[in-house]
Image 1 (cartoon, one colour):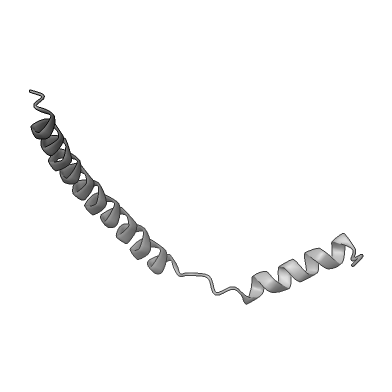
Image 2 (cartoon, rainbow, N blue to C red):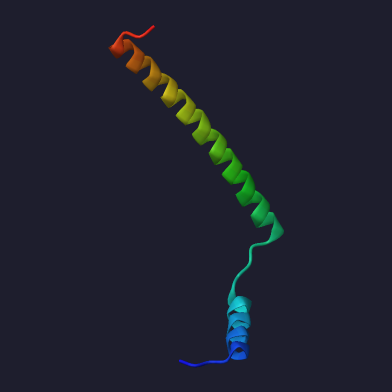
Length: 63
């Protein structure tokens, strides 16, 4: 499959034109949603870690 670099770049450009790019508004909403989910996940894992730490120290008798 010997194709020229020029042909390859033409095909890449034509495929890029087929992509549906998100609008600025969609990008902002998605970014905000990601930050909210990261905050919620970090809060969840913080409390889960604290509970596990408490249970381990209780079982092992460490003060």
